[in-house]
Length: 315
Image 1 (tube, rainbow, N blue to C red):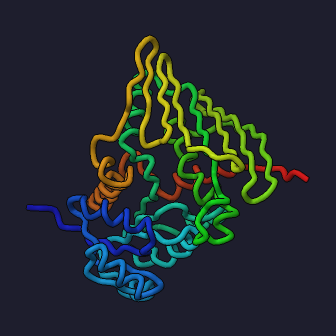
Image 2: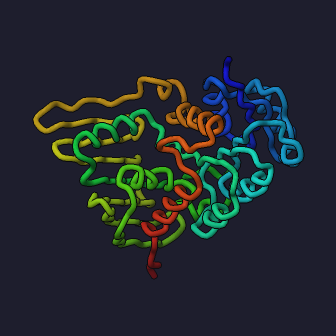
Image 3: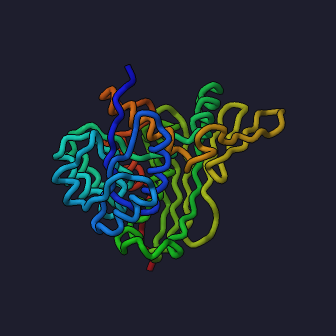
């Protein structure tokens, strides 16, 4: 007998919601039966564009979700409140990051959410990230992890609230900083040399020692352009992601080899299809899939963001 379809109520209809909707629709066993927004007209427009049967307001969705699970994809500064508002329904929840724009807010949500849930850390599900992790593990594990991530906050879309822009390291940088823990485990020591001159003029530089002996290098210059870069170094092996959707693999004495998406990541925004599949499995089994994160796991990455971006103000 075929497994029962899991009906999803999609909460939030912004640009990322469209990307999620495409991936969810392609995963066997999932279907979106409704979408909701503060604005009914926006919800109805989104439903028509994405083939979703029903559009509702947030209040209507809370009053009667008519779903097996919830997929929350609201604005960064609204996610903490939305998660706490929908949690009493008792349904499994997917929560797009960020869940809280600082450590205390994230921890407060963590302490209030008791239902089965999963955080949207889609880079953990990138095909090329997972393949790179396997290659590094086969080489004995990473000896050094480097993350370089300029953040062009000055050019960030105006739709972001002032608080989101001011807390951009929690709203956006957590995307990549989480990969420190994904590859290296828990940090033991963090040494920083940071400066903040203004909201968009920041310099974060840090060294990390992980409990397993792996070293980390973090640098993020908000005043200069450039793309995100992730580099993994192991014995006789280096893997450099720039952009992080692809990688160049080098082995000592051999030519470079490209690491590119060959599966669903070639058709959808990277990581979203595998992430939706993992959520389906979590709802079906009641267990957290390997590599996925709940709020307790996510809060540890948020705490690392805070440690890496502790600052001194320059006159």
